[in-house]
Amino acid sequence: MPVIEHDLVKSPPYLWNGHLQTIWPSVARRVEGVTYERERIDTPDGDFLLLDWSRKGTSGASSRRLGIVAHGLEGDAHRAYLKGMVKALNEAGWDALGWNCRSCAGEQNRLRTSYHIGKTDDLDFIVQRVLASGQYDEIALLGFSAGGNMTLKYAGEQGVNIPAEIRYVVAFSVPLDLDAVAENFKRLSNKLYDRRFLKTLIAKVREKATQHDMDLTHLAKVKTMRDFDEYYSGPVHGFKNADDYYRQNASMYFLDKIAVPTLIINARNDPFLPTECYDPALVANAPFVTLDIPRKGGHCGFSHHSLNRCWAEERAIQFISQ
Image 1: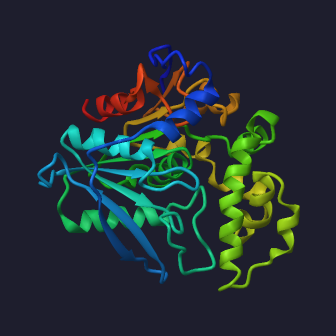
Image 2 (image 1 turned 90 degrees about the horizontal axis):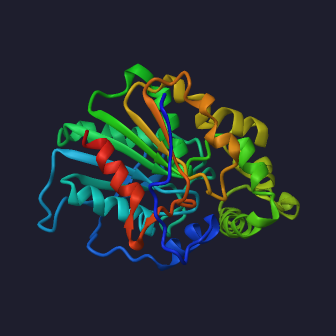
Image 3 (image 1 turned 180 degrees about the horizontal axis):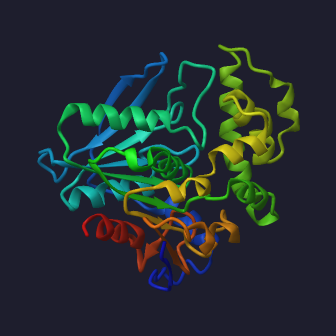
């Protein structure tokens, strides 16, 4: 329910706007000290997931606390923003699991469907599998951007029935209002990001068409992310169109149902997010949700003084350690 606005993120002087605070950390940041152990698991629908585990410290010893971390659109568990969070979790005494959405870890998934911004059944499957192992007493769910939307939606879907072991939820740079975000991506200043996402998404559709029945005639109509969602993300995953896809999957509609302490961190100068993603009304009826709005940080950047420090990681560890 609280909305906190502040200027605590002190970005380096050479990153003077939201675009630089987004792009430069994604290409220049290097996170050392994270060694993943990859696990491949089969899903109930005949597909598979790739999970990247990092145990606490350098000895490989396990903790009784686990952070499950989701990446953003077309990302993976090796992106600097996710590895930085994994390292912070390990240093705070938590094991970490970076899970890769279907088709996002360098290997195309088996089915005609893939992942989408509101697909929560894979996260639920991972959570249930972790719980069945009996290894962890305390779990935190964390997610970036699209992964943050999935994570918040999952927590809202679970509501008061969320497993007792899940104590905290943290989401960074979240497109809470998917329709408004899609419109925001049409802006000239955001064309770079739009093209970047479309390049890999369209390539995956073409690859899938070699194994599954995929209508490629619509690709010529795809000029924006909304177009892609209209013809592919939506219909391929059972939604009528982009509007239906956004309406059923935007995490803003699930916040009031969340029943565990939850922190959303959206930087005010995030070029991906329009003003609708900072509206205090989003959390007015969500007693377990805090909306934290630093003035700076960009999208999944949050560099603090230098690329070696990320304010959002420090804030997340503080939150889940309370």
